Length: 440
Image 1 (spheres, rainbow, N blue to C red):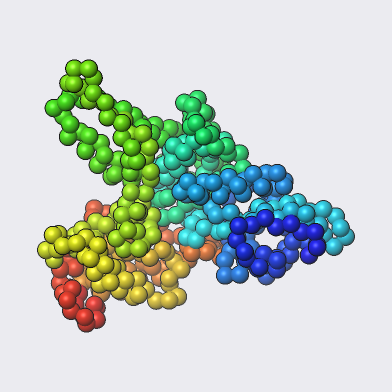
Image 2 (cartoon, rainbow, N blue to C red; image 1 turned 180 degrees about the horizontal axis):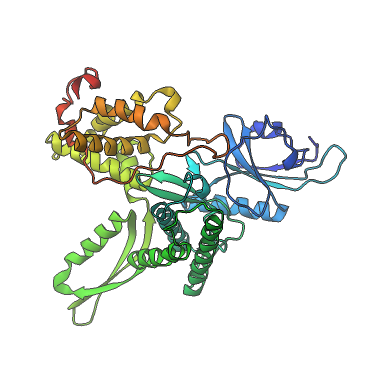
């Protein structure tokens, strides 16, 4: 390693010094490289082991690496879903003293996959639609904080499973710019058009390679991001007027935004001169309403849809045991200890890299509902857990960090089933300290 090597990092990780920075990225030894599936990139990108973690390393210019590093740090402070920047490495040179390209290092996002790794033989229309919808939500969140992406695409995004849907994370902020005064309508529309064209191109490329189902229309799917984006943007930022006698619509608007997963930081309410008409408009909205509530009540960090599902289960638990009048945080702690954690502990150690715990719990609820439909009666939780582990989870590939290129058959994500939550846990006595398996 050259003595002139320069490392800019907010993380004091000495393992950075152990990587072979004196070699071109394409020549790094196989024992350093982690063979993870990655999206299409204009730059050379490789995954490498860094201590107990895996990082993505991208060769670029010093100026672009530093700019993207700072942008990603800023987006993180704004609570935008994106990869975590680790370091910028400059002044690299090989053993002969020849200069090597600077690199940007980001941490690999656990349980995330590029879009091409989220389907097996062919991409189905419903999967493609869910990916585009997730990207639309991410784009709205970026635009709300004043971020112009400039290169919106499926390839520049990572996806995590989120209770039957997907959550999107920004990977490439190289072309992005943050405007303190917010974005104009023209800038937003420009980003949206870039997204539509790029998604169409990516899906047409898959179609040319025989990687999409016959019924999938790439152009129609790509147009879907425009409709999804505009609908969400209008709901989050649009104003509405109603008569003074319909003030209940203020709470209705707030509840509607909460259901979409957003919180209102400020709500502008105005009346006309006669006082007969009320006009409301959300000023600032923050995503993650259900995530924050779940984290506050239980300490669990989950995706927005996962959090919604777990909270529904918690609410059903409170109703099943007649605890709706008790302190919510106390009941949440009881649910965590007697329902959620026993299920997670029941997962064998060798299978815990398959899915995130919250996703496992969501899929277990769906699986239990499915078994009950087949049997015509409620299924004990222990039986449902065993069945789910042996018939579903055991046959999935690991998604914590997917080692090896996606060559095998992937299990399709379980479709969202109408919720049947843990009112069925009523057989469990919360005051019984015995083994939970014996009580359900």
